[in-house]
Amino acid sequence: GAVVSQHPSWVICKSGTSVKIECRSLDFQATTMFWYRQFPKQSLMLMATSNEGSKATYEQGVEKDKFLINHASLTLSTLTVTSAHPEDSSFYICSARRTAAYEQYFGPGTRLTVT
Amino acid sequence: DAKTTQPPSMDCAEGRAANLPCNHSTISGNEYVYWYRQIHSQGPQYIIHGLKNNETNEMASLIITEDRKSSTLILPHATLRDTAVYYCIVRLGTYKYIFGTGTRLKVLA
Image 1 (spheres, helix red, strand yellow):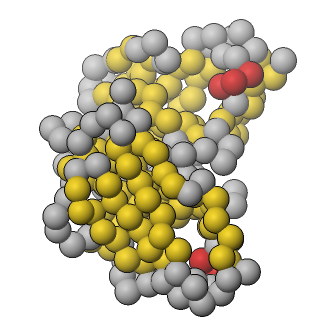
Image 2 (cartoon, rainbow over the protein chains, first blue to last red; image 1 turned 135 degrees about the vertical axis):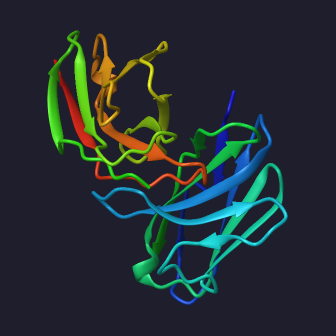
């Protein structure tokens, strides 16, 4: 149990375009989902926290107009990187917390390359 | 949130116990300690968590000192597949995780 999927697993896009990444909890309902970014040889950095049906809470320094997060259901959250630039190239990882529990379960990650 | 400190890297012989330490000297009474690991280019995998009692599951054991200022994750019989970066995280009720730099464990054949 507690499986989280992400789609796509990798994506290459051109500078200036937008990319949407999906995060799904497959076998549980996720009240809260989290989005992280990880650069090579670095640790995970929390970008935002999203609760189903409400606006996401962004960490300091993360542009909410650039990284659009939608958490429309208890099993799906999406991250859209708008007007992507090469510096947005990174490994994006989501996690989900099931209702009435505390531990987070992580997706496999999405590698974004902006050319 | 409490900050964690871990050694940057460790080696362990295959079949031996791997003991990974973590310092969390500013931990508060209601903060839990979580351990995750990340194998290259994958999402972190949950291992174990605890508050103040020692915990054991099918993957590992977690030993928390009585003053709760440090903990040790024990992999009883390390295999090559346990090679990964191990993260010790302290969580408070907002559910947020703040990842530290982790320990890169290399299991040697």
